[in-house]
Length: 513
Image (tube, rainbow, N blue to C red):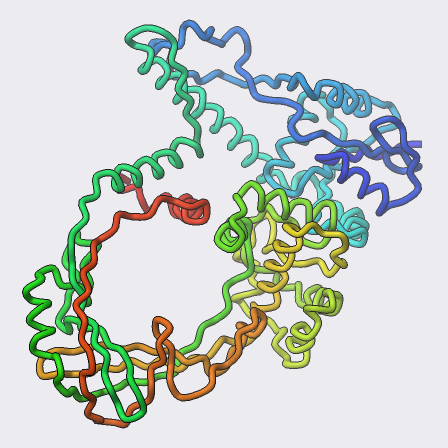
């Protein structure tokens, strides 16, 4: 009786597949049923190497032997996982196996792991692709009902091989060139170069050089407290004619670089009355987009101090082990256009603490086609990270934080915009102008999911101080005026969150086309 060999990326995924499909007995490192044999890799089992006849030995890493561009690559088994590779090769050669199902992670890396195994085995058996966005039993069974032909993901396979080979070429040539350069005066000074590590290091070093070369400059700001009929408020002197000069990142309308000019403002405004003019306008703020992996890593680093690696591990566990999140290694922040019914189901299955918000979305008619959320053109291999609706049981504290972050973001994206009233107040004393700004939350919209409520009263908040109401054209008295001495500061060193942002937009730092 013929069977299909299913190759997953990790043993835990192989077990999930057998549980979802049922009817399997376990052999040592694989499972077997009437229709399938299921086993797995343990991550990468093979690596690219130069064929021996083209390789230059380590002692001859000189400029004369560069560039290293072999006419073809060969695959070499990774020593510590050789036993697993031998098992898969044995299963691939079984006479009763007449087809293979690629059940490695549905992305570029999973495609590479699987294709290296098949290429190394020189297998010509037909291949189909299991493409999973979530690891719930229903999603796995549905995936087996909709297996893709290998030709449908040929582009992804080519991209995976292309990236692996280009990474290898950049790494080997850069490393050997830099090692040869640094070893010119004798010895062997290994200097590694990589597609990601080298530009990232350059970004960090460039920032560090700016910090070390930074010369602080003194500047002054003038702040005044004004007494109006309804109470006191604070304003900052600003230059109404200010235009930002080229090349001075520290200049702004509030800063005075000449102390005598600042002291003159204090002298002529102290104790004087001013006339108020005010502009108040409505403003809205949409919820942030759904998470992709990088934005989730940034947010988790900013909120909880989790490293990018830790966030990925937690999200992967929530996807793979707990089945409560969709596939995390995604660069998309939108959902497929045919996903409305799935979202409606997920909203109905979320844990109790999120149910009131889910009901509001459904009852309010907010779940509808919307190109900001449902957009096929903004999806690559995978869509945005969202909850699956499966119940989150026995999560660790860190896992619960990531799950909560994703679930609240998922709910927020369907809620209406937050509505504010933004007030800009100018207090004029002769030719001098002082600005006060306030912002009142009128309708929380999506912010309600994060515990924000509309603020009472007519005033606003600016820097923790209440912006009291004033009548049109009201005259106010300068109660107190303060000269503040400040210094410019160097750019901050990167946190993981800000470094992720810099890496995401690294191309903007390249001037030379």
